Amino acid sequence: MLQVDGLSKSYGSFQALRGVSFQARAGEVFGLLGPNGAGKTTLLRILATLLHADSGHATVAGHDVEREGETVRRLIGVVNGGMGLYDRLSGREILHYFAGLYGLSRARADARIAELDATLDLASTLETRAAGFSTGMKQKIVIARAVIHDPAVLILDEAASGLDVLARRALLDFVLAYKGGERLVIYSTHVMSEVEEVCDRAAVLDKGELIAQGSVAELLAQTRQVSLERAFFALLQEHALRQQAGPARVRA
Image 1: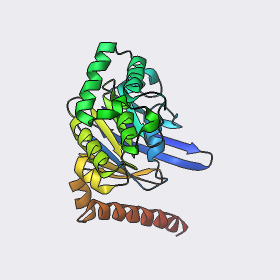
Image 2: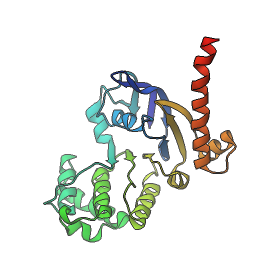
Image 3: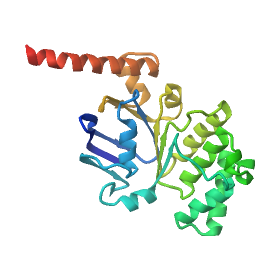
């Protein structure tokens, strides 16, 4: 469902991605982990056709993100922490508006909103203007807006950030329910407990490089740790030591 081959991206002298490659399959939640500055958001923006890579390529359901951007945008849904809403519109009006952008009929949009209401428990959010939304209400509509067209690939970039415990629970349950069939969820987060609960496999990025990937069990076995958080820090430490050792070997 997602193929990433040798993606690199620089901003001036800063190299945000360094030849990143991995695959993610339909029917799974694929985690994307890394500290701030690891390159996660740059990678996700390339996959969402918002940035152009300097080199390498990526495909979504067989469609190249560079050459077939319009097709890819119809196949994906994106949620990140900085997405705004139209304050004067109700939740239902917002969802109808975006359903129209994706070419859904009024009847299909109504049916899809009913499905999402049942899954996300949108309740009064549908009839309330966005200006009056709580953080949890806002995030529910942002998520519903991203999947109104039933995309094959859902990209969640720190989607649980700022949510209370009830809204976070609803999000995680939705992720687990959404991944089935021919769908893929890309889940980027700093919260290791979320990864342990919802992700089938994960990739770890550090300083623009992919340093490990596999299931939670495989990452634990690789690092000989008892928790994903400890495994994550062990991988970062090992990567830092490798980087320090490299110049030393060259000087020798």
